[in-house]
Length: 228
Image 1 (cartoon, rainbow, N blue to C red):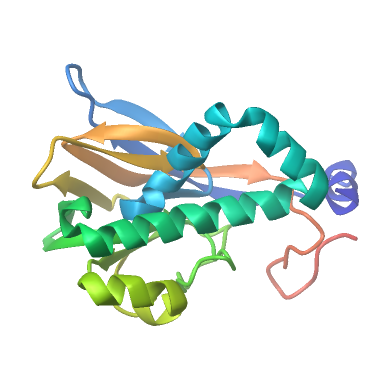
Image 2 (cartoon, helix red, strand yellow; image 1 turned 90 degrees about the horizontal axis):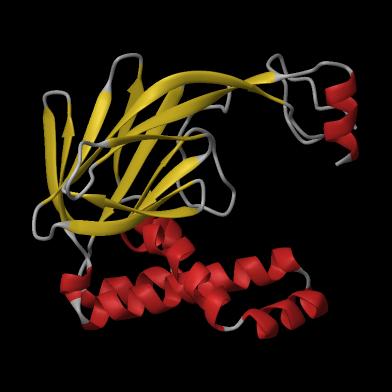
């Protein structure tokens, strides 16, 4: 927080890539929404919805646990519980992983999707290496196909190995990617940890960049560190 305040006072900002999503709606034209960090799909895309449902059912218990261990640690545990539950369910019931078609320009990929993310900077908690910085006007798509029952269970202990199976694509300039559902009408996903639902398809593009105030750990272009 101190580093953010110091950068704000000095007027130090960096551009952040903004994601534009055309989210398919059930009985109306697509809705345009924006994200500044990531969009989650597959089993990962269900996690914020899982957390929201748990919070509404057990609000008093959650507040008590948060006071004891801290909200950030509790948040990490909750995401881990959601991931574990979802991957086990996919091992028991493979149809829980939706079939999708990715349309990326002239390239098309079809798969049963285990988990996926579209991101604009590396996140240490995620096993993907997007090869981009937050100030690049580029998005990185990483979709992991469903590997089978047993490998879904083993993936809980070797996420990085599973990530090496991911279908990857860069989205920049006028590029766009469409995620189309093949075997169902709608699925849950998230934009910046906000649960959402898309019907039939969602289209992802770069909207542009937005100035943000970085924290003390931000590495400025040229190799200089953030303001402490």
